Length: 306
Length: 306
Image (cartoon, rainbow over all chains, first blue to last red):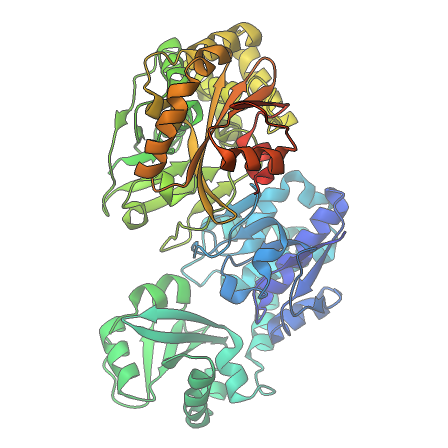
C-alpha cells in the first residue's frame, strides 16, 4: 500500500514541494512506496516550482480513508487536513508550526516538529547524508520551499540553519539565489486569474482573538499595487467570505516582499481598532502600512488584540 | 531562568533518568541552564539507578507556573503532567508514546516523538556525537532507562536500535548487561514497602474501552509470587482506588519479566469478560495467566475490548 504524503489545504510552495521531497525519500531511500498528493490546487509560486524543476503536479485528493497510510507535512492542524484524517493510518508528522492539539495517533509514530522557517529544512536534516542521493529536481524543490517560506531570508522566521541549507542546495545546483527568487516571487505575484474570494482564502488561517473568529489572510507579493488596486472589491468580498466560512472578520495583509512591509486593508471600525491596538498604527483611510511586518506566525498572530 | 525537565507522574526509571540526561545535555552542551525535576517519588528501580550511578534525587514539584520554561519527556499526556502544564513556557517534547492530543503550544517548538522503546534512546540520537562528552553517570542512567523500558530486550516494544544503543553504552561503561539488569529487576521487584493502593497506582494509565473508564496497571517483577500472595487485599483495594480516581475498574497485570508472561487479577465478571474477549483466555479462578504478554503499549491496550 502506497503511503500518501501531503501538506495543508490551499497548498503553497512548502506544502507542494515538501511532500514531493519526502515521498522521494521514502520510496527511493527507505524502500517504502510513497507518493505526494495535494489537498487543492497549488498556488502560482508552487506551480512555477513544479514547472521549473520538471516535476509532475501531484494528484489532488478530497479525503483519506481508514485504509490509507499517510504522512502529514507542514501542518498539524486538523482544520487544514482531510476530514477523515484521524481515521487514517498516520505514519509520521513533519512540521514547523505550533502544536494545535487536534491530531491523535493510535500508536507511537514519528513526529518531528522544529522551530525552523520551512518543512524542507527539517527534511534535509532528517535525510542526513542521503540528501546527496536526491535528484536535481528534488533538491530544487527543497531549495524553492526554503526560499519561499523565508521570503529569500527576509522573513523574521528565517533561522541561520534555513539559510545555510538553502545556500548549500543552491551551490550544489548552481542556482543564483537572487535571480531565482525573483522569478519565484514574480510567479507568486501573478494573481490576475484569481477572484477576490480566492485571493482572500489563498493563504489564510483561522484564529480566535478576544472572542472574534478571524480569518487572517496574507498575500506575499512583489507587486502590491496589483492587489491594492482591487481593494474596493476585495473589501466587499470579505463580507461574503466571512459569512460563508463562519468567521466574524477577514483580515487581509498584503506583504510587500521587497519593501519588507505589510499593508492591511481596513474595511470597518473593528479592523481599525485591531490595527491600532495590535500594531500601534494610526489609521486614517481604508488601508494602513505596517513597516517590517512580514510573518503571520512570528509577527501578526502574536500581536493581534482588540 | 533554569529550564525544568521532567517526565510523567509516578516516575519510573525512564521518567527519572531521561530528565537527568537531558538536563545534563542542555546545561553542559547547549549552554542552556536546566535541571531535572520529578512529579512524584521515583519507583524502587529508579531509586536503584540513582544510587548505583551516584546521581542526586531530583527535587519533586507539584506544579509549574506561567514563568517556568519546561521540557517534557517520556509523555505527551496532560493527565500525566502538572495541572498548569499548558500555561508554562514549553520548550520541547521528547517522547515515545502515541500522540494523545492535549498539549498545545503558543509558538513552534522542538517536538521529537519516535516509535522506540525508550526516551533515552531518542535522546542518544538527538545528542549525536555529544554523547561522548557525557559523564559515566549520565551514560549509566541512559543505559538503565533502556534496560528498564525494554525489560532487558524482552519486551516486544524493543527495537534493534534500542538494543544497539544499550549495548554500545554498556560496552563503553564496562557493564555486564545480564548481571546489571538482574540487580535492577530485583530492586523493581521489592515492593514490600508499598500499600495495595500504591501498587495499583505505581505504573498505571487511564483508558476508555467500550464506554468503561479503565485504570490499566502493570507491575513488572521477577518475583510475581510476592505480589500474587497479596491478591485478596489488592482486589479489595481496587474498588476504593477506582472510586477515588473516577474509574469503573482497575486492571492489574503482574508481568513476570523472566517467564515473559502476565497474570491478570480477575476480581469480577467485568474483568473476566474483558480477559476472555481481549486475550481469548479461559478464566476459571480469580487470576488468569496470559503467556507472552509483557507490554501495555504494544499488547494490552491494543487488545482490550468487551
